[in-house]
Image (cartoon, rainbow, N blue to C red; front, side, top):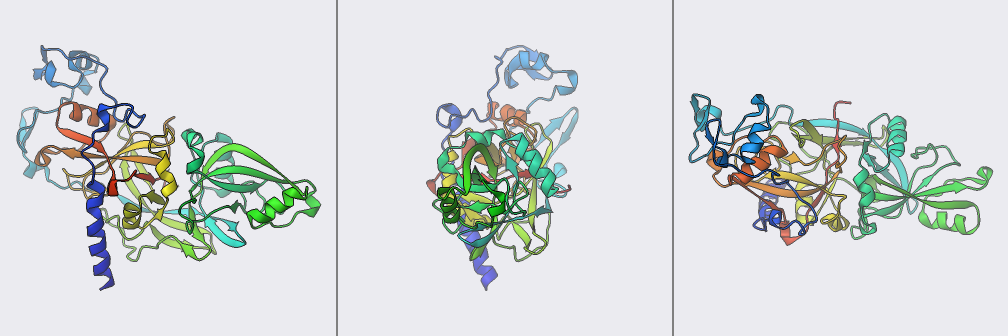
Length: 416
């Protein structure tokens, strides 16, 4: 009965994802201070390009002639579920209406660190850093790659929580090799908690006097007494909490991974505080140029989608909706059935690890086919541009529960 009620709850929440999707933010560049899917810089022509008029091709004749012959792939003028490749006519029945990526959902074991909040234990992961030096140091110390995400430095203070990190003193599990980090909030305080943390260095004046300080109050008292110095560092880390005093992330009940695994019911498969590891479900998708990416989901806003996915609710992330620290991620609400969060094809991200515009914080756009029976696999940003310009798809910002929607989806390598 509990599983049935959970299933009904998930079904009730799913429509919230599509609420408010009629607003088209691509018609107003100032609406989000983000260009989203870039429009073509080329004009259109009226002569012939390959097997059709240049005016039918996104970008026109200039876009066509600037491509190499191998890139001369045109957007079909679709009126039914049939499409033509060369001289071979193929129907939807030939192609199949279901596309499931192989290894669409795989386990990803990630090292946890132990820190403190108000004297209690906190276990957390570190996935991203705005600063290359800290990304390198943490990657080396934890033996698991921290992605460089310079855009996180642009996050407003309202989207950050403060974390204290020790640069000397008692040896321990901290980022710099000393005692564990001290947090100023946990998910039990959703109005102030954020996985994105500002960075305060704590340094003992006399290391011989060092001891474990496991709360902000103790740190501030030590600073007032002249025992430690505090220095704010312009570094933002993505440090999602997994276990905190009197709480933890939901562990998925059914741990069987399949390529069409629903998003509901939790994103964590296992938490081991003794080994200090957590195993997430890593979801497969597309990078901006069609490369394979995998991502985990740690937290989201608003509460409806967060609860549906079984992750932490973080209202503080809503302030990123118009901020450069968040990047666009395009999910599909109809078309080819597949392994995406709405049950259709996998999503496409506007940035990926190694790109200057990569960030783990994602602003979600929903993509819909005007004729779902004619849907095709889209694999990159250029595909989105072309099919949208051809009038075959619509793209609008997701506003579930009529609220700003941000998801913390760090891109990771689950096979490292």
